[in-house]
Image 1 (cartoon, one colour):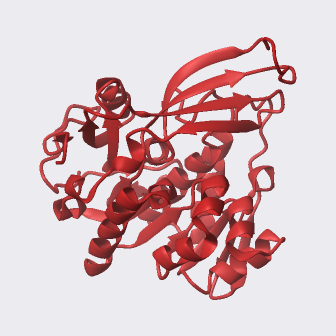
Image 2 (image 1 turned 180 degrees about the horizontal axis):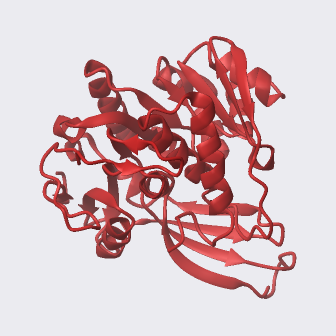
Length: 333
């Protein structure tokens, strides 16, 4: 570790069994459709403190706007890990960097969700914070302070973190700064060496635009699964239609799944659209924060249980539908 100690081997999961270095939980867990998840999932990503402000009227500049405000644990990578655990994956691990200011709070929340924590604690930078402004239509706008997230360093990584792992998922946020990008690519190279499948979520159209599509695509070329939303797919290809963008992207990676919000998701492989999955109808959506993360967690849990891509995407849509019925990006109690 550089300036913090990773909370790694021997961390208890929520049912108080202990996972030692590289040991997967052998008895698995059933997904919603009855499959048993047996392979471990390692997420390398971000832990964030979310400040969610739900305002029922338009923001009034220069004065007060009434809002309901909550502080919740979040972060794209952490959310994916929690939703994968919720969706039936028994061995979910998360590598991320957090500030000492809130490390214990975040660790406890992740443990309760069934996630094994591999947290590097930063004594100099606070945990990342995102202010999510959620309007009356449940759509959100983010203000982001990256804090400790992008300080995840190669010294925080160990190849043994992949022992017993069947799939590596990388949060795209890590690709937006040199230090965390080096760490993510180190994990990616080790996974490839071990022939462990890798997925990436681009995470943010805004930060993706700053990095540049070419740099991002060069970093992730040849991965097994890319999970952009429609805006990210358009930005990465310059194509206005998500289906065309997905098809083009699938020439550079093994498979592409583009999330389309209330229109569901579409699959592409080998340069062509391979399927369309409808969304699950939801009445009374309150917050779309984390819906894409929920989709990814649900998809990966189903995939690890042996589901084909179409069935895994349907599982992702179910998780995404559940996510919009609660405030914040994590599963409800």
